Length: 527
Image 1 (cartoon, rainbow, N blue to C red):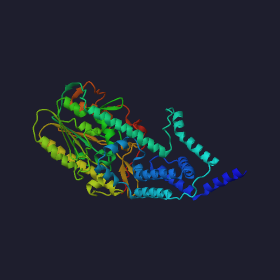
Image 2 (cartoon, rainbow, N blue to C red):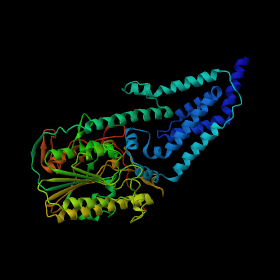
Image 3 (cartoon, one colour):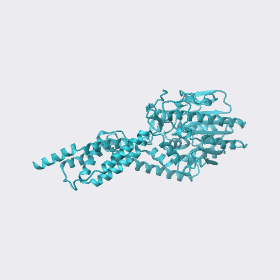
Image 4 (cartoon, helix red, strand yellow):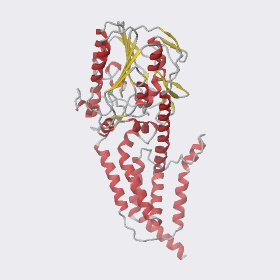
């Protein structure tokens, strides 16, 4: 009876201890900060684990709290914008240069940093709790707590098993452990992907060209950045922010869907031949043009960290001439503008050449943070300063396209120019004065992007409403340039109203998802 009484008293004292409530609040915030769906169950699990550790290993508990609080506090702004760690976020971390990193930090609302600081402060308070009892006897409540934590650990693997997936112990749903798993597993996949790219970079392409009949002398591919189709006036957007595109003669695709929701993965799937869902980086549109006898140039305003450590750099380096305006290291020039690329195109176009040519421009475009690059300039205020700058960045790209088009006209040679964006964005802090746009993979608007073709012989503004997928870009490129190969099967005329098959996108977990099943993220036009 005395033992039961002691255990009851011990349990009662534990439950009414204010530290138990403090740990529960801390557990909820850490769960929320790591980017996973909130779960009361897992908050209770972590609270229970902290209480048991405090009773029997207080120093170990302080280490756990210190590490988890620091990680949660640091990750909170990123978790709210990009969710839990996945392949694409880890790939972006490996591929992003210092300039892009600092720009991203400026778009998060100040209160996200405040909450992160609060989480860290709570961690410090927990670590300063004084140990009053050097040792505590093991009670049955401790056993029940351990059993509860262990049982909760297996919820995720068991659920996966009954859903038809493989039973794996690492697939736990406990946020703290899941975070470690996701970082480790996805980082391993990224490193393996980069090693694969490095290996393929030294390999020759395997294109088998069957015929080359280019209609135009000069072909230009302009790759935009982070442009939602509904933010561009020429493609149905509410604002008249694309005056050149709106009046230009050419073919405008009103339902073009990008391959993925981030630059590296999207362009990796768009610009390369894909076999068994894996990009063959040696077989891309640049090496195809080279193989067909085109002279190729690649001019980029995006950063370059190394020669082959991003999918885009791997493709770019296959061109005859390559120039990055940014080096991509700590010395990267923040002041380089997309317009600076026109100096390079002007130099190329000033020289007459007999062979057909392909010029590729890779823009910074509307990559967050747009206000950082525009100096806070915008034409019309819409909801927030960052949203307004975003709309203005699309106008800046429109102006660049107009100037490039004029350069091409001035050559008096036949030409054709294609412009598309790599992916769209989604809204964060919607409806507030700190509203901003960030990468995501949950909404149709993350994949709805502009795509247009302007040629020297176009006489009217034509819109194609049939749905087209970036996964078929190489088929378009083959038809557009007149390069036929054994490897590219043209199942339908891309520049037509003929319906293609269903469109699938690749999400951040590298899963192929039916585009039609995605939710919507409407652009609110209120000022």
